[in-house]
Length: 597
Image (cartoon, rainbow, N blue to C red; front, side):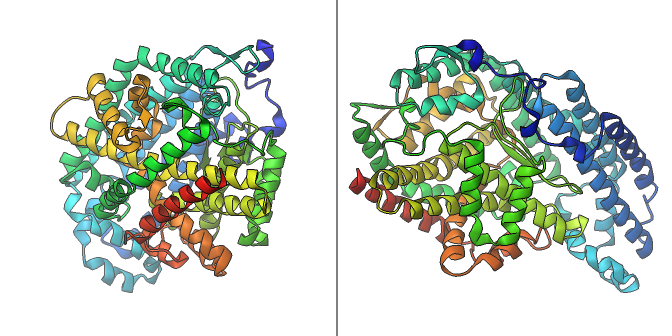
């Protein structure tokens, strides 16, 4: 029995469910040739140094930069996808390292560009008159001019660019430890047989109706992280010290300001999110109390948070069935959107199942001149259906942006990246609720699921965001992030967010040590803001014929600032209203579930 439950190797995996990396490069040999061409681009780009004052030369430089970015995107995607499908494969680990090295070379070779544009200043407008083709790049150049206060002289910019390879060391090491080297052993499954505990299976075990399974999986997982606690604390500290270094070098007042500045997002958005969620703690405590009562428990533990409080009427949803649900749920977005979803399923855009060494979690990779790719670790449950919808939202966002925008504007802001994915989840939930009709069991289960989305996204990700803010404040203040301090900070936040109605098991204090997003530099808050925006947008799509505006938003790339792009879709995250409205919906759903149980 244990053998049947063990993971296949990559070579043993069913090819029908593997992504087609050959759509980027047909072979490793082609990849290596492209990598060599990319290295040559560094020399070609450096030849423009000191010459950008001429309008036509500036145009040629920008065009060359676009071509280089496309090639770099394809090369980087191929190496990353190959490495992530089996993180223990040293060949593709080496490819990732080589791509990173070439990226540093390119960064160094173009270090002159931003200082020269800043030196041109207002002359950029006159150059556009002399060379009208520069008009395409005006927004890109204006974004550089906006950064003037934080750009250093050319020599110093070059030195900073040379730190790039070192800067990613902590994140790379965490990834290797977390995804390739760490083993969690086995637990006893619901059937009494041993089964391997993995990242992909962990949440599945926490959803088990058997409390022994939940507790054993929880304690077994954190036992492994406890054994590496000091190393993991050191890695996180090193990563945040890197951010502190760049903050100081570029003259930002905080790491938060630095990380939000590039996306043109005011710090007030971050702080108002945390403030709004704090204001909703009473409703969250009510939900925790309701969960405890519904499960018939005297005490609610941290390993009791994922199990549904009602019987699950959506059992054993296969990957094929999951896609059928997604097709129907996303039909309001139009025929073209759904036809692209069919292509994603049928043409090798998606790597579906877990195998030994495969990166945990799920993501979408928006390759510049190829179709997007999606990494899944599908399990036959409803959560994986939502994950599929989520990652396809990212993929479609990339597809429309790449198709509609010139290369210089294809890459959209991280701030809007989580909106498209979460709109898909919201549309899926609304479809399932409609299909449930008067079925009380399904309605209760879906209401619980909706509340869990709020808990896991709006509340949990905001807690993560507050943790990131606090840890950076420690590092910026000159203190180290020790394992003990991180435990204390994380445990304190858990106490605030979950309240006295939840037993804070000691192991949860170590949760910080297994969250890869803490290496993404103030990224997670965007899950929460995106989730809030998605509640409004999904309602607008379904009830106000907002699909056309929404698809225009997906096609904008970085052509306009992110907050302005969202206004095109019909929501304004510069105000606290979307978050407050989402939290009000959460409180209503708590009352709804209370009546259904």
